[in-house]
Length: 385
Image (cartoon, rainbow, N blue to C red; front, side):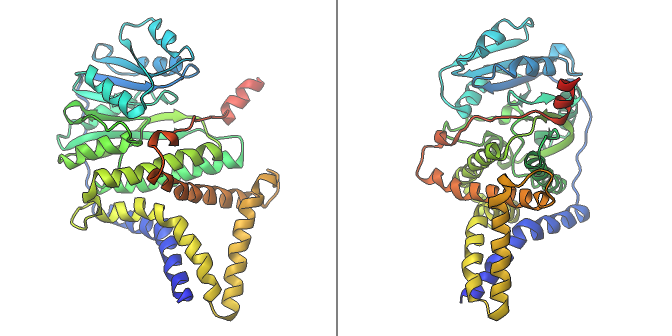
């Protein structure tokens, strides 16, 4: 029985990490569903929910207002969720009347977004976070996708700049893997959410968000999708962010994976085989939640393997986890670092999925942690000049 458990658990891990993404890539090549794009000048409102974003808010506003978009059709509402660091003062003194401030007591991002939506009436609402700067063509490129009446939500691509360490490089590598999956989901009209730092929605489809929801960028797109419209991933609309440490990425994944549990409670049809997103949701989202349990089962089940197989599998598992544990003390120039950094990144992200079960017993807002970013290779080069 333990050997059977090992085989089933191992097959599940391989399917979630490799089998489903490869199946999806073939599916996307055979049955693509493109949309019609044409830029039509449309009034847009940009919402920026922020708490204590003093280091980023001015560059963010500069980035958006320098976009190649008709200036008379663009306005920005900064929703300050209890900021105490001078963010409000920067916004209030910003020398452009298109920028407005909505100062709120601390209530969480979902409440801030909902209050912001109540204040705007533009045909399209763009939602973004405070850290990421936009490419000058990003707004125009996203809005062009709404020329197709089937499209209700458009999300752009978040580009992570190169980091200074293998740890940060592997975090960026994980993002590239995720975007490959998203591109294929997009080709078959099966997107499972948006990228929170850069997405747009028709105002008529934007509904109030329950205050404890952790993933507004999944909740709002799914509300639009269940209303019969399409979520579209426009990878030519780009926002840029600095790399984050593995610790920061761990806490982000705890929050996002916990948010998946919430989304399943809000949209139970996702778990019904008759829903066309069922296979993708279960394979990609639920499968990620099951990975830590599958790996534990595979480790326990290995003890039931016959003879030499037990020794080989246990030795392989032991070596992999040992590399992950030792990675912090292995030097950047050590040849083992390329292997240990990957092992540590994988184990950290899987551990985050396990910790996400805390949402079953803890208030959702306890899972928010401050995001810390580090210098990029370009920034480091500039600082040395």
